[in-house]
Length: 519
Image 1 (cartoon, one colour):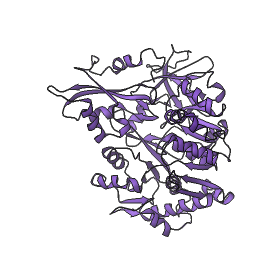
Image 2 (cartoon, helix red, strand yellow):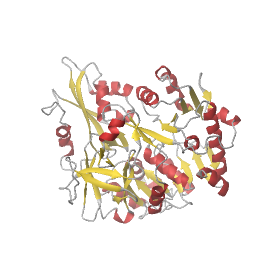
Image 3 (cartoon, rainbow, N blue to C red):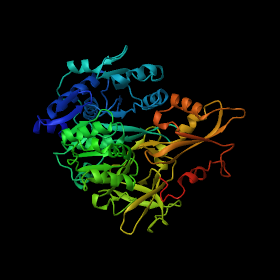
Image 4 (cartoon, helix red, strand yellow):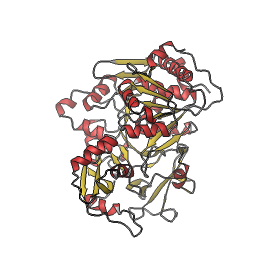
């Protein structure tokens, strides 16, 4: 089977594949022919540094860029596993993911190469660090220089090798991130059916909104590429610069969490009127629920039929779609099951929930070709989330009489803030390592700008004079900035069940009182 990149390099060699346009005026473009050649060059470099076997791991780390798009294609061609690393992680977090995934090679943007210098003694499996888009520090290699000397021809690999896999680390409910492994065996028919439902055409211009190391922005970018569309990468999100890119390139489709769109819609009217957004045909809303207020703000500025909402996750892929005509008609709904996806609700006893309305909630389980393959080296956690051949990420939902689904709560403690998945156990583990903290409970509280905000209830050790500022300083050393508690309250003890489990629902309840949804 011909690789899609090879096919497009032959059928539309001069069409623009990637546009990397930055606010400082620096622009890098790649036609489909050039993208294929650059991907081959990088693939051949990766072979030269030892990635010769199917399934071997390569870490990539950096903001959105043409270099990231090249890496995703090089890894696919070689049949190796690409592991995106969030460049916002702390050194401790980055070291854990890099070591746990068993990668032997790192491909990193020059701006973030110093992080790998700092953690070098904690990632002994890494044999080579390849630096792109800038100078390579000592003991690292310039990938740009190596690629300039590499062959642009297709890499020589066994003809029967499967395309590469992707493994994205999600923060763990038990305190450590889990590697969600997604192989190449997902159904292309399912991806095509979803694209048709969203009205995709080869003439679409896809603009990145949010970092490509996330499954949503990265997955939809990859799907657009597979469809032969042009990709415009925004290096780092800025609302006015995003509008500039929409206007300049007539961007027609994107995927976004609620926070970037809220920032765009809240720009002064005199700024927004400078830019033409009429080209936007398909805005895929996801990563966290969009409020009705935000939807109305969006529809007041963008084309009325452009708003689609999906429900999905890193592990389960896209599960539900709410079409444009239902956005205002079905407030709070995430839509109906996506093509080739089966959704069932089960109660705590494992019985299927068949009733309608919020009085009949159940844990949402999914069966589809796009469900991930496993948690890397944590198969027990993968199995624990299965029921009757279906998989869950712990969301609670109900159906209405028309079959529309509504996410009303999370069985697990995950927080979604600005579209970022945050697991309290990870933060609690860090806080409880502090000498003056006896115990901590972390949960999400509602926030108009971010959706949810990280809040910590802390029990100090006897004699401690710890302050919220002290907690903030300590957390910023050990956690990515978006995981740092934005507010802290203090307690003499945490409420617990008879078995000793913290009653987080009791702690959360006052903050969510009067709201129909608890997410």
